[in-house]
Length: 175
Image (cartoon, rainbow, N blue to C red):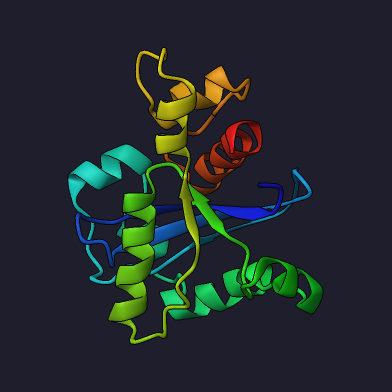
């Protein structure tokens, strides 16, 4: 896979709809070509201590942030394929890649439903499962471990853009 978008969400609490930040890294022809990061006002708009301790974000950080539909309009511009590419791939959007797609795809579907947006049925790939298949020898398959095994140094783990960059590096290497 040479063209895709690596994506990562952070949440304010344990509800999938509570995305409070998103990082997206666009890969074209096996090279990173663009990236996007935004804070998001979560829904519901409260933070629990557990999540804040993981990513460091709190209500004050997202108080003036846009809501998900406004942020997704910007992300979607990056995902839309030109006519020729869409025809060749048989779909209008880049495939999405996440490390532990169950979480990120779950968040995406939940916020689309929460805001009554039509979900385009994105193709989603998972570097977590791919890494388990390709690198069974690793002590674990956490993002930072797999990234290191792929030669990528992940700094600022649990920052949505940093995690999306690590996921992109892994996908370029093993997908």
